[in-house]
Length: 551
Image (tube, rainbow, N blue to C red; front, side, top):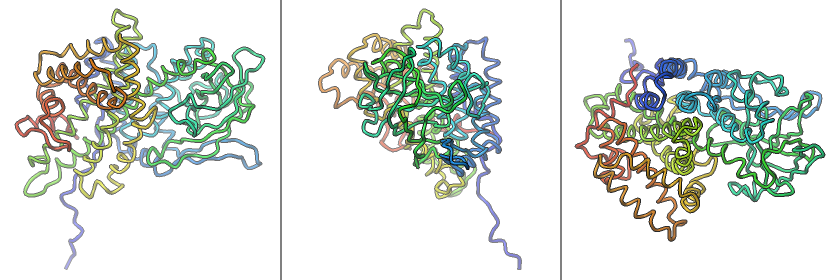
């Protein structure tokens, strides 16, 4: 008798062969909303091209390979010469090359550049999040480079290039370059003013040599790094190239690579500057934090976008699984309680996407120099730490709940969900963890009244459309009116500001069923602490269908 015990039934097909961009209604609508109509056609075409590649079986395999074969440190060559190089699996280079060629380091000074680039970043990192680190660092380096026009003239075109060149060469010989950061030291962490790395000035103006140890150096294979060090007048920002103009290697000793929870395809390192490490000053001595803030803000927004990407991919996988998986007499997606869970997850994902894309649009408006430029710049100053605090905090519970929707299958590595879960806490730690963000919000409230005014104007544009939203705004205003004991309740305040801001965006622009659900559950108190506790009277089916990918 033939055995039929291994016949496979009731298993969903893999979610591959689809357009990650076009299949994301919330993202498509955000691009259409925030981009000039004259740019839309070309932008949609290029984003759809990137979306189809990201959803392809080949690119998904690259993501798996890059994580299964993490980078390796090679400190010396075969002859004993110190080389301090990091080697990567070919899949890593393919991923990075594809994303660079898609313009994901090219936003500054490009019409609609930040919205287009943010959408592309949100799409590309769904296939593999680790390669988003060098993309983000390179993109974010531009504000710091522009402080020194001579540096910007050389390095900005290389950073914004659509060509990926992996070889370590002088920047003048490279069609494209990547930049990283080395800020954190083991005794200080986020308290960069505690840094002890020393910068000693040389005879030539703006040139120094560095001595010190950096506890976290992001993307150590990059062509140059933004570094904070103590100059004679205080903490200062520097550019440290890997290869000097004459072709010789700068003193940049990689001591070890970090063994991380997630983000395993990407290298993070400890590096040593031995007293001969050449550096070029950026900005004035003693103004290092001020010089680096534009870069920090840009990377914080990428944390929001990266978390939104992880949420979106996790939700897409969960909805897809439940659409094909049958249990208790029918498809899981049709079961009222599972539909509630999926709708709640989809709601959180859409709110994150809407907020991240609105802030990208604020960057474009601030750069354009129009009538709203100052207000948009002020909005970014407070809304970015608010968004960074809240969206990155929501990422891990969203991914964990989405994994649970797949049951035991989701706990197995082959599903891809464990990699998403390991990745999910990173953005809440990178560029300042939760307390740092919340305290930054407090700092802005105390010292930059124009930022609070810009925030309230943004929120005020949605007033009158939903009574639960209006009540939440009144409660927030009451809390903002009294700043006593503000540090101890900074997290509570940042959370409320984020929810009100997300609510304002959804009330203005999302379909009614999305805005209604958000206001009910996130602002009206008609939702529980766990996902899947939305009021059953809401249009949950529409929320789930909106999040579903058609393959």
